Image (cartoon, rainbow, N blue to C red; front, side):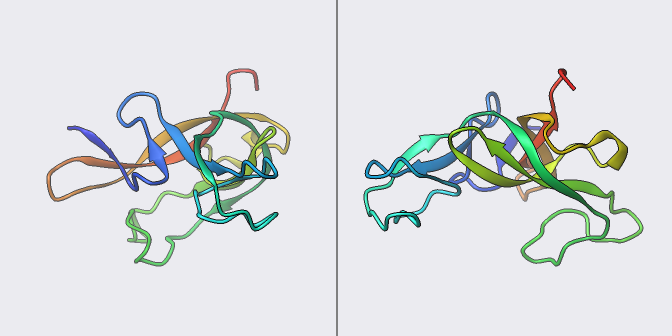
Length: 143
């Protein structure tokens, strides 16, 4: 089974080395995620596409204990089979805070300030039999 990105404009390097696709304003050095055409800080309109850092710090988090609305959510929606997951903001130093799924769903194993790294998690199987994955962050081995 092959892996494919849930959205090629947000996540690249699948399969292999996943990277988030963001933008950087050449006028004010502000980073954005996801990529957009204008800078929300200075209103510049020359945003350059960049691959964002794969490591960051957990800024805040919560646990998603029930299925999100579908659509747009494409994962498991049956409450009997749904598995809770962490959701948080991961600060990519010098770049941007990214709202992301977390691989950890045990609240006793999450703490603000812990080191995190980019990974992917499965969401669904598409019509061609590919595993559709989305980006997530997991605690590093330093925690």
